[in-house]
Image (cartoon, rainbow, N blue to C red; front, side, top):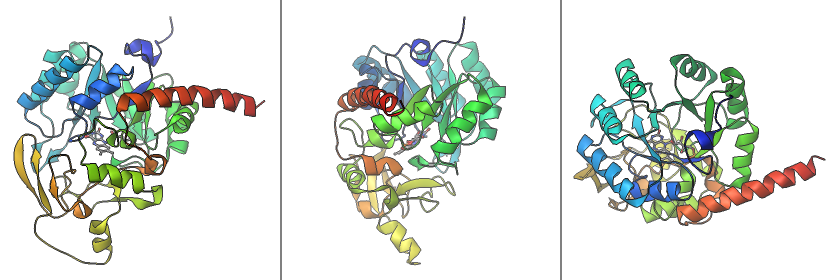
Length: 334
Ligand SMILES: Cc1cc2nc3c(=O)[nH]c(=O)nc-3n(C[C@H](O)[C@H](O)[C@H](O)COP(=O)(O)O)c2cc1C
């Protein structure tokens, strides 16, 4: 018997995954995506394990469907973004898949998840990283292209990266991420070799995302050229390239203007947090201050986003548009 297709393997009805975005993707968004037939992924970041346990439980109240958890593997000034205890919480809760980002997890974490029968995904940015993931025994790779919003290390666009990775990894499950926001871009990703698609920026501008309303409005106004990859943001997570919407903070940096002092305040993982200049902490519903000086992570797909809608409605439309576009492509190619 051949390998199961993505929807069968993950018991979902659509091959569509929401990005686990720290600070932005909470239980409401994850449940909305899973209830719509996709696979929601909870964002975490360096949150206390007790909070992780709580948001998993809250999501379970909102959906009977499967959902995953995203764990960032990196040291931050707020502490390690994930620890073995975070992994243990996922194991105890029976979460599958667990999606690792930025760095591969230590072997002990991988072994514990594997022994518990949990699917393990790794986010990769190049053919070389994809080959390592294949050799490392991961169940799937999220292939993040340069178009992506948020932290991004890929230098290649999806158009060249996804087919190259597909050729390199054979029939390993590949989830394409970066620049996908509608039926047309979804179909393109499948044509380039994806088993499933992952959307981040499109879902930041959804009703359920925790992003600040002005951040959502900035996504609606922006075009692809209004985003750029910068290392400006991040006393909390230094020297990591990130695709963001260009705002006053970037223009000041370009002009050599160096201000000091905080830019606002927020609640971060349940605690008050004063946001330093060029903070990498994303503005949420609980943030006040100058969003023109905050980090608004977003990808090139901003140009294709013109509405803030409930995630379920977005997903249903993307799925039906993709079906129609596939038929139209077939007709055009005859
Ligand atoms: C606001 C925002 C926050 C993000 N946070 C995370 C994160 O915590 N962990 C992660 O694996 N990826 C994160 N990403 C990257 C996404 O997982 C995904 O690769 C990206 O959003 C895909 O590109 P798109 O934004 O064009 O859809 C984030 C992306 C955005 C836009």
